[in-house]
Structures are given as C-alpha cells and as structure tokens.
Image (cartoon, rainbow, N blue to C red; front, top):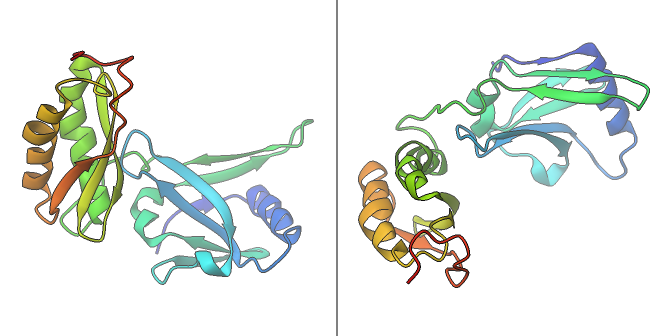
Length: 196
C-alpha cells in the first residue's frame, strides 16, 4: 500500500474543490511528471472517468477518493500534502521527497529508464558545452525521440554527438530501444556551442 499523508485540512480543501466541479469527477488524481529526474513535478488534478488507469492505486478519504498513478507510486512514497488558509485564501503544498530520486530498475517503464540514462550519464557530459538533451516521447516502434537544448541546439557537431554519444549510450543501456531520433530545430544557432 502506498504510504503518503494528506492532512485533514488538505482533505477538507480538496473535497470542497471537488464539490464545485461540474460533470463527473471521480476524485483527485496524483502523479509525478518526469519522475526520478531533476525536472520531476508532483501534480494533483481532478480525476475524471477517462483519466482512470487500471494500475491506479485508489484510496478513500473524507468526502472523496484519491487515485494515484501506479507508475508514480514509488516516487509518491512518503509524500505530504497540506493546506494552510491565510488572508489571501490559502495554499495547498505538496512535498514529495522521492519524486526526483532515481528509482529505476530492469522492471521500470521504458521512459523512466531512458530518462535515468539521459539525466545521469548523458547530460553531465553535455553540460561542459552548456547543452542538455531531454526525452520527448517513445514511439510504438520503441524509437526514443529527443530534443536538444542549450549549447546543443543549432550546434554543428550535434549529429556527431547524437550518433556517437547519445544514441550509442542509450542503445547500450536500454537495449529495448530500436533507435534514437532528434526532433530539435537546429536552424536556431543562438546558443550553439560550435557554429558551423
């Protein structure tokens, strides 16, 4: 069972928000976007019937249900949600100490494993040139679609970096991938490390 805390004040606030919603709302949905990376964000949203997934963890609270994304569960462990009212209305705070922690193993989703390699092995090398690369998506054919930024965008050496650095590292570390593709617009050379 997922271990996280939603305080009484936060439960009251969320139940109040849910009561004001029109249309069918099942409860709240909590998940982590870009889990296990420095860009991880913990999110709470309304859970409508189309949002529900079979692997969601469902928990009962006072006045509503919480739906926690199965994929995010390990990153939501020990999360703390609180609400403090003040003269401006109040603030909902979410603390998820494990959201940015790499929790990756052979059974982790493909996207998590690719992000882990990018943030822990590829980006530290690109950082010396002020560059970075991030995962945009993984296609049905298991092609990792990447976007380069910083000093890598518009860099005349990006093809070399992609083929001999990023692609080789990803295919070696995540063998399920069939290929790696770059979708960056390299016509903008404003921040390029090497200009062609």
